[in-house]
Image (cartoon, rainbow, N blue to C red; front, side, top):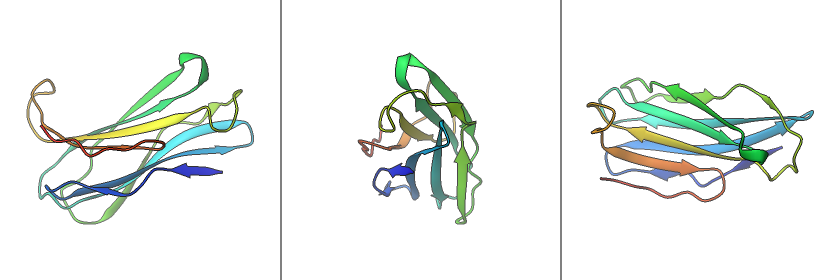
Length: 115
């Protein structure tokens, strides 16, 4: 089963859709993206499960306009199918604490954010 948020596009040219997938007692997060910014970006994909369990995966979307996928490892899912959520954040270049947030896309609620 897949639960996906809306496809979002940032003015800078990055677009993404984040999903939580479940099958056979496992859950994982996947983000489909396209980076048309012309720059290397950093991305963090976070899967939040029941009981406060969280998995983060750092992705590096290449600077080309080709579709890409980033996916977390699969975790045992003991909760209800809708108990896990995922968020993908895409940041621009620069030091981690200063990099601008270009896009935030979620599996349940999603919002575009720009600093």
